[in-house]
Amino acid sequence: MSETVRPFDEIELKRMRWRSRRGLLELDIIIERFLNSDFDTLSYEELAAYRELLTWEDNDLLDLVNAKVEADVPHLQPIIDRLRRA
Image (tube, one colour):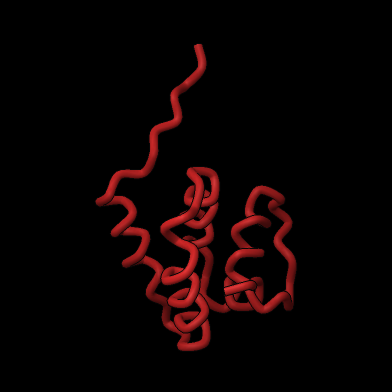
């Protein structure tokens, strides 16, 4: 039996926005632009990938967004690309 994919509810979306606040100003600026321009248009898969990225350490996430390193996780690449364009 296949599992039904449920969209994120409003409370979870607010939690993700809250967890988007980071300890590095540079990262906060990038993420704030992303939240204002792209967050509301993300697909379920992109939201799930973004939620996973929020578990990363600030310095690692900043290096990833600044393309100093590449993720070894292919399913994260679409959301990383959107963050880089923000």
